[in-house]
Image (cartoon, one colour):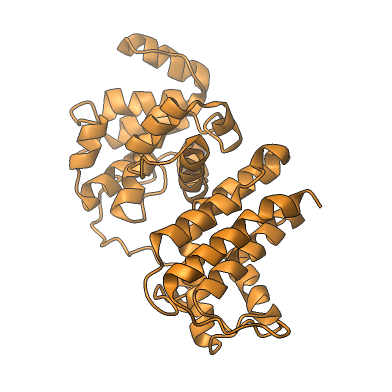
Length: 315
């Protein structure tokens, strides 16, 4: 990819007033925040020959989309889909307005369209769709919407593609601790659906902050299930206070929003029920019945237990 580094550097460093004058000269809209306008100018002046429509983004290779993200001055690492999501958000939304809190103002049709563009599952009600989008916004937090501070302050110090360096794959330290396998077999879809639904029971009765936190965790139920499976396997199938504390530590290290006591309690309740369905030995339960049972009866029982969460919220 060939880029005019001098032109790009000037777009990085110019203030809003100058960017608006430049936009007017180019015949494009000069509305929006400085970052929105900056992205618009990069599209027009620097990458004018590139198809940056949704379809165009879908056709880019992993390497190509990483290079485009670098031109926009935002985070360029991550999986292929994460890069596509990040570029789409950066080109089409203002990060100050596209927030988890503001998702509550969107209707189901808008959320459905957003899920489509972000390559998410399109099934479910408005709350489910909102949770999926919230999960993407959380995982992409600080990765789009504004260029890196060093670029804004100093511009490009050297041609952007002067050196060809292989991009290291982004890994998480937690991945070394959390094996993506499960304690027994792959979870039944009904289990994940029930856990997802139970995470947001009574959502509309909670403060906005708690709503956002629960929606964020709801979008990560499959990750939660895998974390629980790994803990059970490494702890001999036990599920008690120490395992719950470990889960909270891992969730916190992964950046999950569990500061609110209500959110933390809800997470542990759902996690405990998932562990029970997976056949855990509830180590601190007195007179607990054997947990090994056929999957269908386990799922029926857990559905009943999870539905009791709503009643528990009233206590």
